[in-house]
Length: 623
Image 1 (spheres, helix red, strand yellow):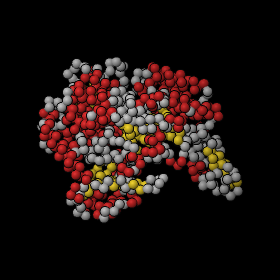
Image 2 (cartoon, rainbow, N blue to C red):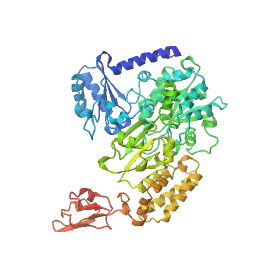
Image 3 (cartoon, rainbow, N blue to C red):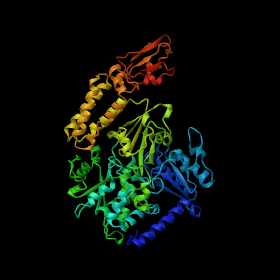
């Protein structure tokens, strides 16, 4: 592949690739274009085999002259994958299996008919939606950080260039460095990694340092349970994130950038590595890029497998080959970071917004969102919600819209109980807060936080004490142990929660939880310890009655805490069939078939629930 040597020629190539890709999606020369979801979720559901089957059918039917097929990034609607989309009609098929490929080729590609049973059907209205944009899940979304995901082949530089890649960098290279920083400042972009610090300010601090060596780090060490935003962005359009890093490097005067990505993200790492290689081959990474005098190189470092390495200074230690433990601040990384040099650290989603801001301008970007939180936010919507998936919405969208319009509500007509935002560092929001507009300040005011974008929905079957315990178990495992408050305090908090969920709790334990949580917040060095108790404080504040019920009445109404549960057989309903006894793994159920109702020996019962699930007559109750 020939190298791009100057700006003028490169801009002509961008224009050519833009026209070519637009023609491809528009079906120029009556050529149909098939794309298949290649995100990790769909790959695990056989999307690569679906791609191979399409290619096989196309070859056998001699259709290669009028059909192309590609693997693309995440479509977002994860609960309905794998997806197959056909251009130019924009027909979207969901839950596609390998055996469906032949029907799609015969009916749609050759026959011009939609395969009705494979298009999305609204479960409430029973209306079928053949086109992606008409599906309610997508209606309130706006893709900026997820730009190109589900559209372009992430391993094709020409498709990336044909879908806006490097237009932002070209514009930035025509501006002086301070002007680029001002553009980011004026956009109002705040860091999407959790803290929400203004991105432009961070860049300004690094720019103001008098150093010939500076660094940019992309934090892709996404460790929150249930979060997969950064992974999907890197898998779907790695070139966009690289471009964002290059713009940041140009703005502050850095010539090297490091991608720190979870080793558990092999697809993202592989596509990122291929993107870097292809950019180096054409001269878009390296020395004197496009003859402008700007030089930049990108490197990849795999995460050390620790949640704490998502913290800026622990991440820097890890890249330097040290143990991933946080450093005292100040000095902040923008002053003294990687190898003691000024360093800016932005997460994947933050950098994915940068090319858009340069392309369209700060003023256009700042019109999206709320007064203090501009732009969009990507959420990994999961838990007890019908439409699980990756969602990007403008700031200011309410939690109710997120859960009930995009997510289509709670399955099985269960009652909504809470949504946990911000992962282990966040808190839960309840029914009273459903109309809260989502932005950084509103969520903090309501006792939670934006975090990196995890959003876990919980229904009446979730025990909120157990939820707090789950997050604290995670924090205990992930604490680096440097601070005694975090190392010891999280263990003591977990012991108290264990005590409560096992039926041994005392009301005085609630005061101890609050006192220890306060100590943890003020005494820990980094954000992991400082926010470790947030799930406890949040659930304790909003569901105190649930804690009291566990302690005083020894009851877990959700039926989650096993020590507080019991299964009982109603003798009036028991049909004396012995199915429950036959399925009991501990032989805790006795009775006489056809004569004596069966009973459960509570001393032998391990509360596995097999009897409850196997009884067809609903004679067994869970208390």
